[in-house]
Amino acid sequence: MTDLPQMMPAAPEIFLAVAGMLLMMVGVFTREERAAQRVHLLSLAVLVITMAMVGILNGGKAMAFGGVFLADDFAAFMKVLAILGAVLVLVMGRSYVVREGMARFEYPILILFATLGMMMMISANDLIALYLGLELQSLSLYVIAAFKRDAMRSSEAGLKYFVLGALSSGMLLYGCSLIYGFAGSTSFETLARVLGGDIPVGLIVGLVFLLAGLAFKVSAVPFHMWTPDVYEGAPTPVTAFFSIAPKIAAIALFLRVMTGPFGELVEEWRQIIIFISILSMSLGAFAAIAQTNIKRLMAYSSIGHVGYALIGLAAGTHVGVRGVLIYMAIYLAMNAGTFACILAMRRKGEMVEEISDLAGLSRSKPGMALAMMIFMFSMAGVPPTAGFFGKLYVFLAAIEAELYTLAVIGVVTSVVGAFYYLRIIKIMYFDEPAEEFDTPIGRGLGSVLTVTGIVTLFFFLWPAPLLDGAAQAAAALFAG
Image (tube, one colour):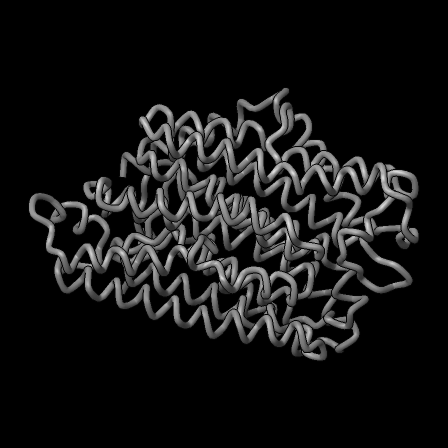
């Protein structure tokens, strides 16, 4: 039996799991009209407490459950980002779920359990623990993708994500089984010790399957096929959640697996990461140009951003990992802000999603147009917005690792991608005004827009906390 001191590193996860189960009881035994609101507020409180626990218990390296669970500075950094993403989605999506008839107590609880799965993924120190966390997250995401049961597009999005997610999970599990068969262990620490000298071909094949499964979870090319349809079909707050928190957790898992147990095989997996990165950046830059639906455009944008983040991983160095962490933190802020703007695109109580609906927004809603312009400039990497610094750090890591071609391709695709971001700004500021959006946008959306806009625009004034935190987290990853 596991004693208490060995379980303390996992206290935030244990608290979140217990709180999620208790909230299910609260939802069941509360009158239906009050259950959703009560559980929503309690879920926000639980996430904030969990984030505080992660920060308080952060310090050094600690293991739980026989070494399959690892808590360190890297895990704490990425967990805070993932939880913060879940909090932002719950805050800005509240008015949407009420208006669209989705205000049921199960919705925030599914967000909680998806977040729990992400936290377990980030702290996984064993292939089996990795798979359990991944599936806990995925099962929750399958359900919330199809949560708007009366909408055919939502049901279609959930089914597509489920079918393709099951396929990717099978590939990942097959890769894990090959690695276990040739290495004799699923423990990351044991794998790091035994993977030296002559590497069996079967183990390399297993690593390729593992990479394919992880690439699906971050929607990297060529495993991106689900992303545009699911992003467009899922309810907008769910799309926002998909684009932020699970992506942060999956990138963290990518970093943990590649630099930990397979750190000695960097020359073997680097070429795969470079290939995936180039394809993702290129597809994200060119495919988004023809999009007319803003949620589909954001799907291709997220694919491109994953490609940029993988540049830092391809470097395989402390500087590269630090660049990825900085990039994902900035990506969280500008993506959450963009989706807050999308959630405010409403006419006569109905959501609109066409890019042309933003025409003349600067004259009807100048504040929202200004926020959207900040986020679009940041996505494009225009200085002095935060997005510029995110790309700068991963490109510098690639140059330091002598991956000059990859860095050049990253810069070129950034220039191409800037076209469709700047096109949105042109539509908002120079096209003839379309019909005005509904007012007001709500306190939750307004708060998220204001905070993320300020962070994105004025990041350059005080970047030290994020830079120092990312450096400390990257050092902890390589120290492990």
